[in-house]
Image 1 (cartoon, one colour):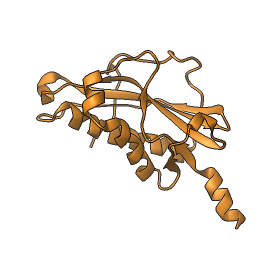
Image 2 (cartoon, helix red, strand yellow):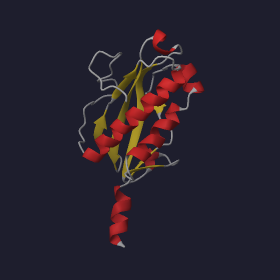
Image 3 (cartoon, one colour):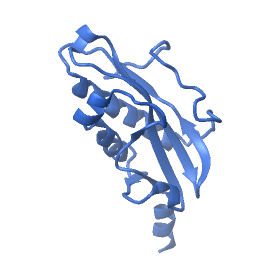
Length: 164
């Protein structure tokens, strides 16, 4: 039975909801109306192929590998393509027994016409979850942002893979 125990120890636990980074208000109307903060972790579990599981426990108090995901920046609006791009950036922080061992900060945007703010955020959360799962499966863990505010961009200035 040691093989099963070793597999269970490799599981990464994360919260069933993601939160805004400290001090960031985001777009409160879309945080209340939309369920994308729960959709992203659920999609991450699906895309991770058994590597990630959700827990209601405080992930900061759990042993083993845990993943904290926060919304670093976002933009959403109703009005489809007429209201400009909708985008979000998250930061995924991987911990091993409470010690930070890796960070990843993906960004996605969409300009889909005839799509509301919640629908756009849902599509973005799905893409961000796929990106994060791919990062976790690659095992490319580095610490890129030494402090809380480092590396936070304010808009879509760089090349970003399109959402399919």
